[in-house]
Each structure stands twice: as C-alpha cells, then as structure tokens.
Length: 167
Image 1 (cartoon, rainbow, N blue to C red):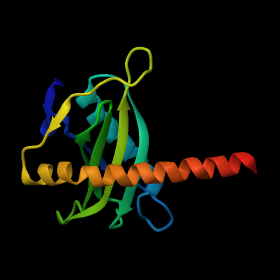
Image 2: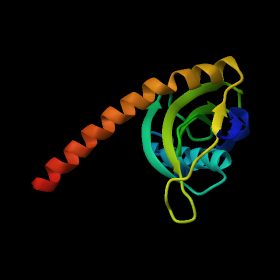
Image 3: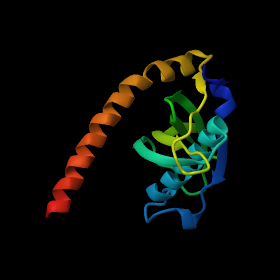
C-alpha cells in the first residue's frame, strides 16, 4: 500500500513584484516570464510530494485570463492535485494584485505534469494524494479527465514528431 500525503502539504506559494524589466511593450508581464514562474513553483510542489528529484513531463495548459501590469504583485499558488504511480498533476493559480488599491484578479491558471525520479534517473513511486476541501476534491476528481486529454495530446505530438522526422 502506497503512503498518503495531504494536498495541503504540497502547497507552494510565491509572490513577486512586477518590475519594468519583466514586462513587454504593453506594460504587462512577459508570458514567458510567467511560464517560468509557473514551472518553478509547480516543481517545488512536486518535490514536496515526491521528496525525490522531479522533472517536468508536460505543461498541459496555461490560460492567461487577465493582464498582469507593471507595479502589480503576482502570486502563484501550486498544489499537487493527482498522483499516478510516479507522475503528479500540479495545479497553479496565478493572482495579480494592484498594490495601491488591493484589487485582486485571477490572472492565469495552469496544469502541469511532473515525474519523480530515483537515484538512477528512473521513475520513482510517489505517495497517494489526499484531498480534503471541496476545491481539492473537485480538482482531484476531475484529474482523470485531464489525464485522458493529456494521453491523447501526447499521442498526437508523437505522431507529429514522426512526421517531422521523415521530412
């Protein structure tokens, strides 16, 4: 029987001030910069789950919902929502905050998949995740559907790679 770990024990939070070098010509946070933040915080959450080295297997989605402007604070919250034998789905919620007014908005949502590795670089087993709150239960219960989409998309990517290999 696999050990268990509560979702709350995988929570990782990061807040950064959005400065001019972090922004594009529109005065909003570079999408690539936000994606790097997302991968970083998600990997910390995955490490907390596995307590082994982890690698990013896929970034399933990054949905940019609201612009994050220069001068705002950006907060990322990551949590493991589902585990397979060695894989983990990590959810990241990105919130922007106008520091002068306190107004907050959900700016982006993302799902990533990580795989835990053993000392030989091979997939290592991870504990079973245990949801507690309604939000955690929903994320956990809907993970199977996202995993099915992930498998289909990966198959399509493999086919595309074969096509380009022939070309």
